[in-house]
Picture (cartoon, one colour):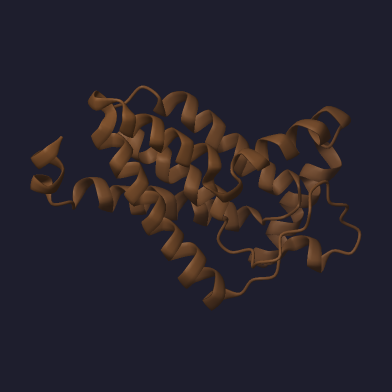
Length: 178
């Protein structure tokens, strides 16, 4: 079985086994929380305003920006993977069809960038954040707009970018004024 066949097998299992009216109503709401990184940008701004969490907020902001460059400007155009719904005419979308490429999942990469910074900075908000991030990641597959490998790549990219930002940063930059 190829990777794409495995991806479709998982997506179709989700559609055939988990699809129901409650999740049909909930998943679009969850996925829209991740649109444009909205919820994570809001979290970043809140953390920046609070003096004791300012460094964490700044690191999340840097991670979100660096991740967006990596997945939006570099990976999506280079890999140019079509979205699953474009390859399966039987797919019924519950949200407006995204017009960009599928790989990697930007919603997932953005979410896990924020989660990783919170985790690396030992901020207890990482626990509810990872639950929300996982729900957003799952919603992308439930809604048939991303393959499982797109979501997995988003988790890896988001976490990886945040690891670089948190551990290979000029410490004096953040310590000067905060």
